[in-house]
Image (tube, rainbow, N blue to C red; front, top):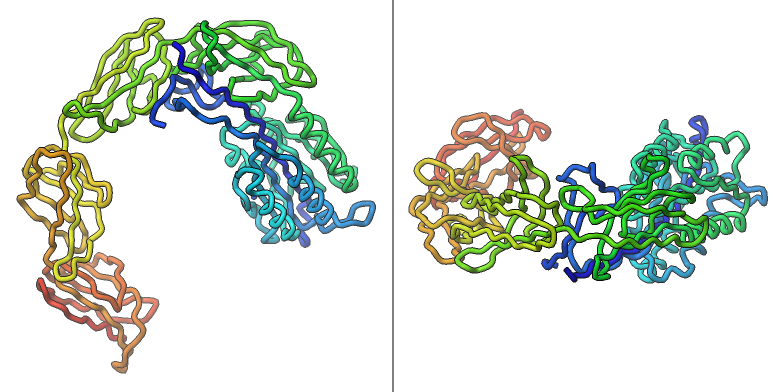
Length: 565
């Protein structure tokens, strides 16, 4: 097996410029060709549920390194440093200089919190999403320049949002704070929980102009993360600490590389253990942030079943500085991919579910090829309601198989239901019925794949339902139908109590004399299928009697809602 995998190298640094304030001090104060693979995330492991496993497409490009900046603009940043400069202005200048550095090959992003509202603990905003450095540096500098110190210090909330924004990236968080969490949350507990889950992000804390009594709260975050706490009392201190942490992040890392017996690169996953206890989960997706020291590495190709295939074990020593690169040769698991054909023509497929002994073990997309454990499987797929398919296949070492799903022929059907007279498109999902039973839902844009036959097409609108029999779907590959719906038109207008014209507004309509209130816009022609209807005005506009009216096909009438005296 010689298909190559791209070895992905990712260094992600999250820079958080935060200001703290006490709870009492808030007045001043976010390809369709695929190669076998396992989980995209290094966090996946043998115990992960199969449903969480995602295949990775062949030819996936190298992820750029990432620096995610969070700037704390809480009110306490209006305070001063020992040199009498304001913290907010010093931090902004240092950050502008920082993002203007050499970031070739990086993606940058900016989140700000506390910059809009004084008492809002969810005031955290992603101002600049991830983008190539050369494309976003100007935006970053401009945005940073305009930030004002206003609100609270939601450290925990911002870190939680940052983790979402980080996605599958791994790296470092740099937290720069002039105080402590002010939103009744515990960032230390959050970071401890990250570490217990082997989240591949480390948090570094720099205290900016902190009083001695506040340093303990920030040291707690560093201790929870297993990192060193730093202090800064000036612009040069802050710039220096940022540079130190960035340099350490770039130079100290564990890099795992896998190869098959022929020497071809292949994605591998595994774990680092010490004294028989798993400490970190690692993968060849990029840099792995781990503490220095000796470990026992267990690594192999992660199958879609969630297992390491014939894993290898060796002792490793992670160095304090520089890259610790470990190469492992691993066995290649069998692999499976799928194709769907209709009359010998290849078609788009659907999600495929693999079962063993009647139990679901994993899923994969129809365009992917994935590694799997040896054994016998039943593969099930349901690309449309006319096709509920199953294929059985067995796999041994070295197998690379394609399973084939033969589709019962269906027609790609699209339908537009149009109002008579104007041809207005009645935009709604439609239904196809046979013998009193609903067979298909037909999306108004995407349509549906349907077995040939004769159907009744229905517009299942609560107010203006319509059905037409005799829609014949033949055996060709695609068919489109325009169906004319006979309608009349009603315009609902408002009058004041004295009979003069009032401004039109929303109204509420029901079928027959019922009380179902269906929102409609007054002052415009509304297409209605023939029948009896009633309409009432908006209670916030005034008091109106319900008006009952009939409409015929081709009729055009006005209904008046007159306010009571």
